[in-house]
Image (cartoon, rainbow, N blue to C red):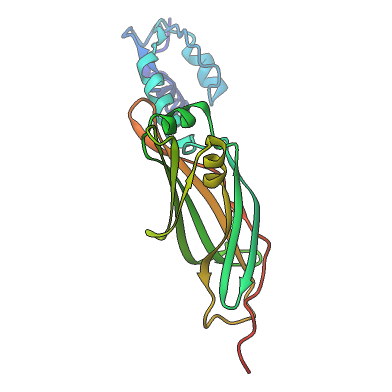
Length: 248
């Protein structure tokens, strides 16, 4: 004679309830007096409860969660993936001081792909945006951002005159224009940046340790077919330096 539900010891009922009520399982109804559990879940918390439950006739079947798993994968991917990273990189970052001005020069390597060259040759305005940050170096802590600036280098090809116009805008203000006739000269103009006055150190204590960091934005692309992301390089940090001592 099989035991009824009321005859199950009280200390085993919570374990049996958790086993039969697990959200991943569909329990088919059957008499509690004759239960046979077919569960693919093997990690039962209470071994004695597992032995007791196996004496019945109730079947437990694992349901397929294909759509739910696919949705979970997309959500996890969206949170785990990083923004669009460019294969290009900032190199040869040099910082110098001219009075209280911080001059920064650098080179962008690996930026020109066939796609970018074709875009310029088609006559479409094409630009690279450089982001510069002046930071205070803090040991054993995140560096503090003190100032930011941008340099936009835009090129346009004139198919009639067969020349390239390259404009330089520092913080939105046009500071230089160049006309070149070769595609290689255009690429060098857009990626080899001569020292430019990026920041002012006027009134800044000379005891602070500073650094400049630079990255480039090369446009945008869509991610997962509909999410727009910026294509940027990694940040490149300069050597650390101190402001010049004040007068007197």
